[in-house]
Amino acid sequence: MDVQTEVLDLKLRVADLESGAHGAVPDWRTDLLREINDRTKHLRSEITALKARLAEARTELSEDLAAVQTEIEGVRREVSARPARPGDEDADLRLDMAEEFAALRAEMAHQFDSVRSEVLDLGIKIDRLLKRDACH
Image 1 (tube, one colour):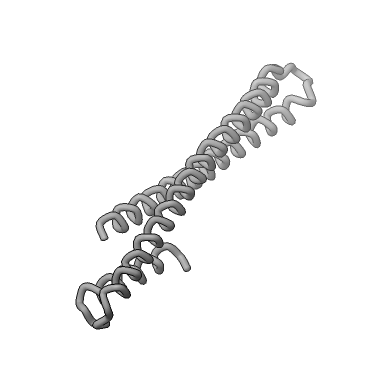
Image 2: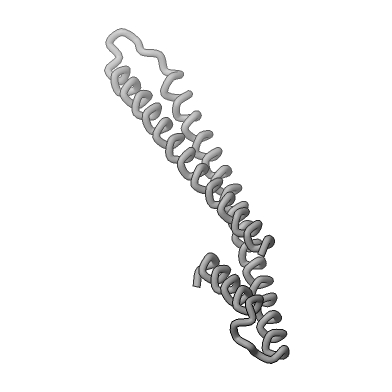
């Protein structure tokens, strides 16, 4: 069961208890409230674990991207460090490589921005779930 379904189920059960629809004995209500509290604690711990994994993924992604950018910069420096000379047959190849690296770098930056945006959106959704859960 996903977190939203679990929270909705708990809200409905609490609403039933508050309305007195079940007409149950007080012990049953106490047991149910205890179960609701236990589930809420469990959901909060799962959300905390998800937040920790999300932060870890952000860190790993940033480190990986920094390493890739460092390698790209090294290749770009090497390619651009060799000036074209008259009659240099490799000049066109180096120019093509430089253009290809520039295109790849732009594409990687775009993909990284997309992933970072998705990670931020997930963080916002988790925060909303926590706030909604805390309010109820």
